[in-house]
Image (cartoon, rainbow, N blue to C red; front, top):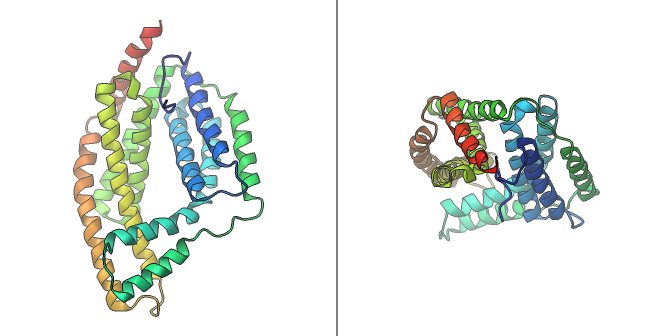
Length: 295
């Protein structure tokens, strides 16, 4: 049964926060039961850190002291494992743009990327360090308590997310840079997570929105993976990747990114239409009607 959502059994918004963040932290600790994190554990840990950060951002207005420090901890912990995920993502992205081709130079390049994608040995004590970090977080979560009215906390959090996502989309549309599109992806992921939290409030409305936000995030995520592959290929020595093949691959990457942008911008415009404050107010009105069932 999904736990990353609001539920009527939650006595308050604070209780919902503790339950949701606690469940994600417990899942992380379960992933870390082995001596060293494997690829699936690393991916799962990073995803669950993002989910906790998203719910913290949503409720940041009620957590003025807690949110900044905990968000920074989660960002740094997950970021420290990023390189162990990126090499595998580069290989998967390369396979997509070179699917089915057997040219010897491409096969040699793939072998090079596959070697890079092999997980290095975990640093001594990494597993213990991560377990200690999240065990301590689990204890702190038990004392999290929101300040201020639930309605205000939710409205401010939802409006802030939409405003940041709209600003990032406009910047990405104007700049068309890999960095700007990656920043927009982060904000789109926040929107996806927060829509998932509110899905039970009005499933017929919120679930399709969550699905579209997920599609947007994945589209922009693929754009980022292509950008990372391009940057990596640009830095390879000539004996690993000859200039003519490099140019061919770069052209394919650019073509794929352009196609993704063509899909992403109209989808983002639809998802983020409307005044952020007004949309937030409307969603919270639906939430209050839903919560009235337990009154």
